Image 1 (cartoon, rainbow, N blue to C red):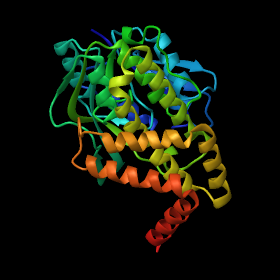
Image 2: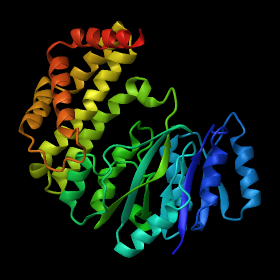
Image 3: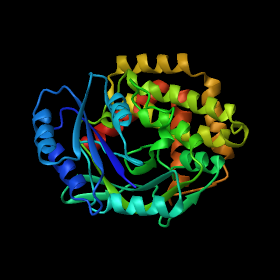
Length: 341
């Protein structure tokens, strides 16, 4: 049973060698390592070609400048293994990640197995990502998949997972989207019959300054489109009535992050532009629907001890933003100023 490891590579000369070394030194050797290369302005191609010359399993597949999702799709189009594993080229993996994921997926017969994630800041600071369960979790029905997804027991990312390759038959990543994993996740959940999560934090997710979570621009509005797609998938499969509150709680958290980032990283004039755009695309009634879901939520599937506190924080932030968007910007800006002193 063979594993294809798919790695998009673009302008990552500072991190690519560490990523590849972590893959090639696995206790379970992958069948092939596909580097989906996009033309770069650094030594990324040189490093990739060096590894391809040393290891027969390492292959370079070139693609046009279309971004991360297109690179993953290129990798999928060339993959021949029974299982696929995605790794971002600025991250790296524990030496037994492939072995543990492969053992679990063959033992359980799952379509997808996801491991825990370790946030890697530097050698002296590493943190286990919140929301990871302490025990193995086996899920075997669509409603459980989506409820776990909405309540942070099942993150949308594909990099901490092993999947049967046929799970992607007819499914590809959405190109040009900021939250590409969130767009593909509902389709993978619908295609799956069994999903297993394990607690081991085997995937090392590098935290870099200037990341998309520390900026704000128009691309962040993709989360609105993502919510509508999730809603449509649930409606098409008869799940919306039972899961609508869960959907709106999930969306509320993401919306809170979005409005906070827009206030935190935008000057006053630009922030007001974003507020107008949000109200153009989301009605006040939709914000009320989120708050109604929060007030009515019953605490099902609370994966974190601070889950209730998070709900309360989200409720207060969105209510304040809905009623006083300008004051909200002033409040966030003032808090940032206080922290910087």
